[in-house]
Length: 198
Image (cartoon, rainbow, N blue to C red; front, side, top):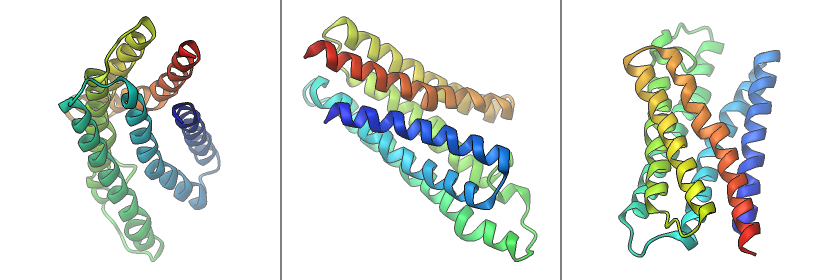
């Protein structure tokens, strides 16, 4: 089951990258909606991924395990709210000719919807990666590599979040290295770890 979830994680990240690339090329409303839908779906996929890592490798009664669930639940709820509001309210009002201030639109910074999404994917996702690393019992070299990788992913998410809020909005692009490319690397490491243990 762990291998299937790791493969699902890789597919999800690739699908996300393809949809974003297509949207940036074509700029169609359909692709924007698909981008937002894939974003919302990706959060539960990453929750499954992190929990599958911890299923066999967690120290007994680890508080960190519970914190992974709490932080990823925050990610899921916040990103769902931000993108649902954008799809169901903001974009419909714009299509009807209503002038919506940029501070209420996703894709602009600073804006309420982007702040919610940054909080989800930067702050809470970063903490979830770090809590997963803290809960992980690194019993061998491969598990230690996975732990380090998770810490790096979490660190990149948090740097992107705090950088965009405190320094400059362009610092945000550090975060996708953690939850995007980092997730693919975590999935690959899981598959390699599973192959070695068999």
